[in-house]
Length: 260
Image (cartoon, rainbow, N blue to C red; front, side, top):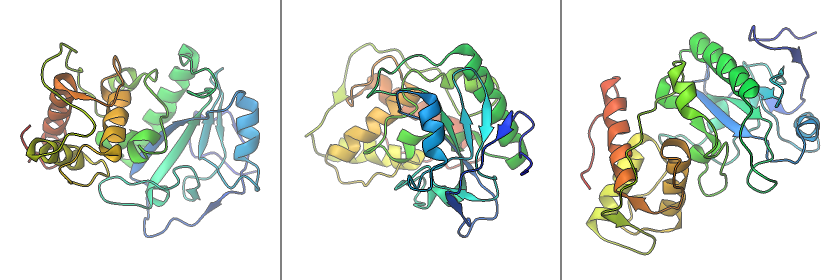
């Protein structure tokens, strides 16, 4: 029997879907997902199915059971095509946690308190053992904004940060004022894209509010400004982004940003 890597694991259900980590001795990212299927049991079966060619290191049920599926030393197949801080092989750099929830396509609902408690305990353990930086605790939508929306705007990122996991700042209130929206172009849009890139998002500085820019804004809002997720970069979104860049810089990262 394979011993679990984390003391909070309830059982080990081996998935065959994994490989060697490429060019990375230890994971430096923690990626959180929702399963996006009607039933958690079905999602667990799929993650262990060799034909599905997907997996994760950990699965957390709605009842709070923590199941390990892939050893942390191995490269699980959870992120797909993704990018963060210019690095594209996210699977080799990360540990992936799948959290049972139907997701936006099947009746997205709140994450039960017992499930969130299990997620927080698991994340805290992983972060402590691997030294994962707060700004490297991310959602699937952060690293794949054009494809993914998970774990979504109902996930309690603030509660996770209160336990010392992840970088989070109080979101700026939605009050109206200046905003940017799809189709706009010019230097302010380029500056906005540069700010998102500086934080870590995989976005090109084109000067045009294109589909990728809209997707990045939505992903950011789902994680950091959850009260309104619309893909429109309003003053609240910009102010929250600026505060996060400052907080990241204060931790020793680059604090250089473009003004918007």
